[in-house]
Amino acid sequence: MACENGLAASELRRQVTSPNGTTEAAINTFLSGGFEALVDQALQAAATRSAELARQLGH
Image (cartoon, rainbow, N blue to C red; front, side, top):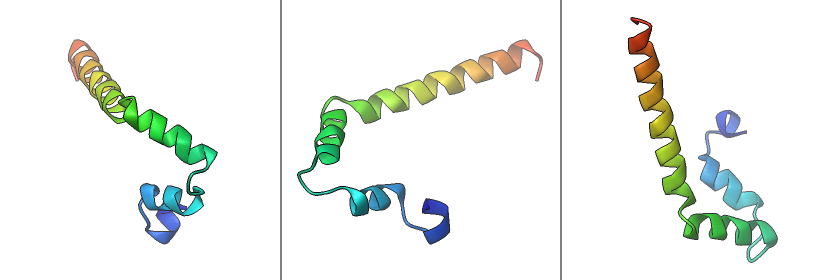
C-alpha cells in the first residue's frame, strides 16, 4: 500500500488506527519501551555482522 499511494508507512498506520483503541495502546507501549532504538540497534548489529562475514569471504 505504501508503494502504491506514496504515503509514509506511519501515515498509513495513523489512518487505520482508531484513536485510543487497542492498537494505539500497543504502539504507544512499544514506543515508550524503546522499541525504535532496539530496532535500530538490531539493524546495526546485522549490518556490522554482514560486513564481517563479507570480509571473511574476501568480498
